[in-house]
Amino acid sequence: MDQRLPANLLKKECVNGGNYPVYILLTLLVQCYIPFTWKLCHVKNVDTRVVLLLNYAVTVTISAAIAVKNDLFSIFSYLPQCDFSRLMVEKSLPATAGIILVLGVFSGFVYYFSLYSAQRNISVNGMGVSSFFTQMGLVASVIVAFVFFDEQISKMQWIAMAGIVLSVLLMTCNNQKIRINSPAQLVIVCVLNVMVGASNKFYAKYAMDMYKNVFLAIAFLVAFLAAGVKVVLDIRHKKTTLCIHFQELFCGITMGAANLLYSYLNLKCLEMFSAALVIPIISAGGLVLSTLVSILLFKEQTSRRHILAMLLVCAFIFLLNQNA
Image 1 (cartoon, one colour):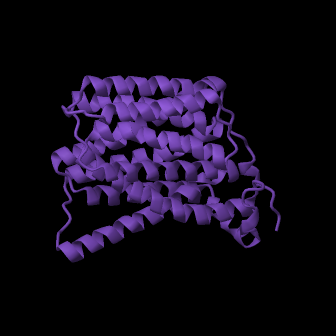
Image 2 (cartoon, rainbow, N blue to C red):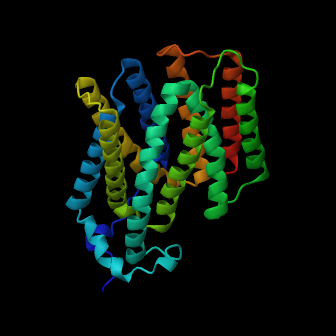
Image 3 (spheres, helix red, strand yellow):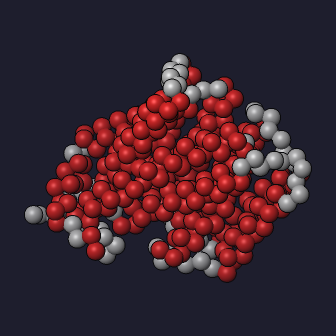
C-alpha cells in the first residue's frame, strides 16, 4: 500500500516564531478554567457525574467531527502494516495508526481518572492546595521526559526541581491554617497528571501531528464510556438519579470545549518546545492563577507560608526553564 501522505495533508503549518507565546498563554488560560469549574460545581452543589458525561460527549463529538471532515480516520487502513516493535523508530502512517489505537485507549482511561480525581481532590482539599501539589507532578514529568524521551536535564534543572520539592514541604510542615484532608488524593492526582503528560508527549514525539484529532476522538470516547459505566454503577448501587439542570448543562458543555481545546493546545506546545519548557511554564502560571482565584473568589484559607512557598515554586520553575 502506498504510504505517501495525501496531497491535502502535505501542507505544513507555518507558525511564526512570534506567535509561540500565544499558544502557551491560551493553554494556560484554558487549563485554569477546568479547576475553576470543579470548584464552582462543589460550591453550587452541581451533579459532577452529569458534568463529566457532557464534558466527554462534547469532546468526542467535536474531535470526531473534525477527523471525519478531513478524512483522518482513513489512517486505520494502514493498521495491518503496523509493526508494533518499531513504533518508536520512525514516524510513518502504519506506526501512527498503531499509536492512535493503543495509546488512545490507554489515554482515555487516564484522562477520565485524572479529571475525576481532580474533581474529588478540589472538593476535599480545596482549589489552592490542589493546584500547588500538582507541582510535584511537574518534577516527575520532567524526569519522565529525561528517562523516556532523551531530553537532557542540566544541573540547574536538578537544583530547581529539588527546590520545588522543598517548597512543597515548606507549605505543609506545621502549617495550621491550611488543612490537607486527604493526602492520598493529592498523590493520585500527581501520578495521573504525570501519565497524561507522558502519553501526550509520546504521541507528539512518535506520531504524526495531523492525525491528533483521531487520537483525541479515540481517547475521549474511551473516557466517555468510562464515565457512563461509573454513572450506571452509581445509579444501580446507590439508587440515585441524575440531576440535569442549567448549571450541569453549562458546566459540562463549557468544560468539554475547554478540555478539548487544552488537549489540542498542549499537543501543539509539546511539538514546538521540549517538555522541560512547556510543562513548567503552564504549571507555574496555573499555580498562580488558581491560587488567586481560590483566595479572591472562593475565600479559601491561605497563609504567608503558602504565599512564600508559591513564590519560591515560581522562582524555581523559572530556573527550570533557563536550560530547557
